Image (cartoon, rainbow, N blue to C red; front, side, top):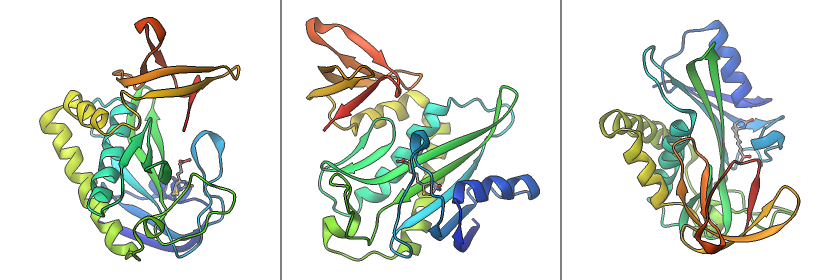
Length: 243
Ligand code: BTN
């Protein structure tokens, strides 16, 4: 499987999307950059990462014609792949915070930005962007952010982690073919941050409320039990979990 290494680019997601327009690329092709000048995060945020210290990369997942895959199932598979690779590194209390932040304890160590490419209604491919904090040890003004090195005291080989992720992601998609989306969803729910724990949420009007995360719906909404056992489903834009 191909890995394209760059010294610098604006964003590996943008680079990979451009490259796809002019080249036919193997499935699971990776573009990795030591430095991004315009690293992008979820919901229009910026992704900051110290050059040469971390992994910032994008991986291509082609969707075969005839294959129907819900974008949230993609999200589940990618989250599980990152989780699987990191679970081998003895990080304390590793979890997936819905929809796809990877946390160790209360610290975010990895962010995922998935951009799907459609032709009409059909999903052709997905560009999966991953920012994993590896050997960076200072995160100014970001108290809830950490890295593999800060949490374990060890320095990690970036190339090794990258190759491992590529092969684990491939295995997870093969597992999806065999077991189906429901099984993968159950696996995802098993590693969900704050599942079944009393948690505080904030809605769009700034109101705080209590609830218990129960899981996710087929469409990827967060299922929360509120007071009086009322079950409600929330979209990412509707609530944030305070932790
Ligand atoms: C998040 O906000 O949590 C998602 C962060 C995703 C960052 C990665 S770094 C590699 C890829 N290229 C980008 O511009 N963003 C993603």
